[in-house]
Length: 232
Image (cartoon, rainbow, N blue to C red; front, side, top):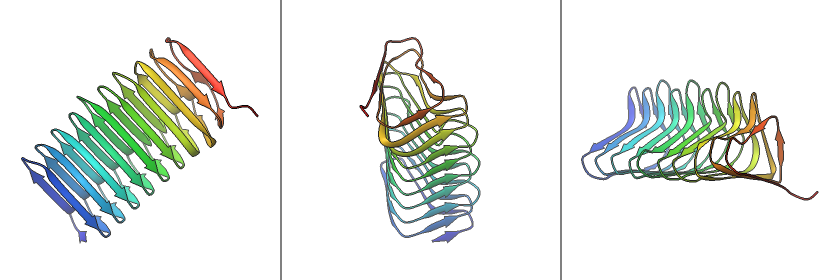
């Protein structure tokens, strides 16, 4: 589907479901959705937005995205917001030329991001925020030209796992903002680096399990700190 505005536009007071099997091109949006309850997307195919976002979803209760394909946007590659939970399971490369690659937030609950692919963004590569819990699991290169490669924030626990690839941000490779009990895991084939910090965190209790390469400053804030390194 090719459109001079939105390739797919869906809006309802109830649940909204979009199942896509094919490539989408829209000048403004590839997929844009608003739902009074849950916004749900199951997509297989490449999605391109020339001037807006590849996917842009807002669900008053929840936002759930499963994507298999490459996503290109100007403002966001993928944006998903839900009140009580927001989840993304993505396989494919995501590019945002003027904003964030992946933005997932739940301002009243938990957020989960699983990304298997390369993320390239002008702003944060992956940005996850949950009022209770935020979880990010990344496999692939994540690059931010002006921000953080991965930014995760929560009122409760934060869990970030980098399975592989090079994670590099102009500000930080990994930024953990807030949180209570926070865990960072860097896999054996992963590299984390940043312009100001490789890893930075705030007032939470932080544990870093590193089996890969962390290059740059590490600032784990004011909470309790545990750092583990794999035996060589």
